Length: 148
Image (cartoon, rainbow, N blue to C red):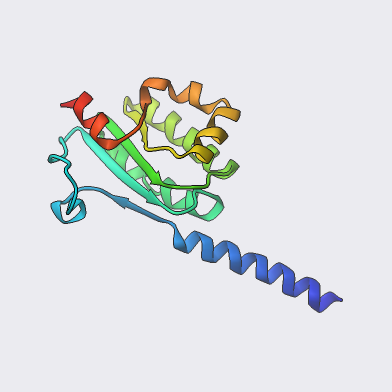
């Protein structure tokens, strides 16, 4: 019975690791990353990070590595989350930390392209109110029209 319990715990850790490795966080900067997109060139005051996959326990740590963004001090930091279908409590906590860090240095945090599950989780956690409705956009194009 001990071997079965140990096997279950190991399987859970391996599952968490695999899910974390499937999630990608990338900066959207060059033309090669926007191929096939109708987006105009990004203004210098805007930093965009695309998140793909589940925004949960392990993946959230990848986003916390974005502290280097605050060193550049863009006016707007956009998290493009149209490929995020799942958000958990750890993801909410990371968003809260990012929002606080951005507010401290005067950077506007904007979340773009939320699906229904992440949107509902943020609403239930009362985080949408903290982020502000003006900082939730349907698409990156909508944000760019506002900035340009």
